[in-house]
Image (cartoon, rainbow, N blue to C red; front, side, top):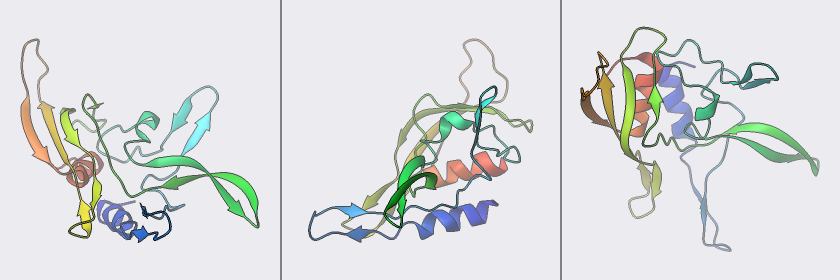
Length: 160
């Protein structure tokens, strides 16, 4: 999925439903993912099959991408399926290397995406990350600040 389609797909999931009964706001999940495919192999382990992305975002980042293996129901019969949620949440310490020659990135601090009920819109969160052009002992990389969505765009296309 291209960057513009990823953003559009996630924004389509930003339609909250408020339950008068429970007093909670919920969001729909999709069976279409922002990664091409999610797979599992006994020898190789899990994969998000996103090799075309500028950065290596492996299977262990499925929580950051809001990918879950959920129990769903069809004709009252349960089955398991991967679903895509609306919330991107890269966290402090996440280190992402590029397979396309871009500098390594490490999240220094972050705030998750979340629904702002007062303003009735999505707060896109914040990611403070360090860029490591040349990794040297004692060297501090350039620190930059973007939203969670902007950080995801960097990981997909490599443009900062």
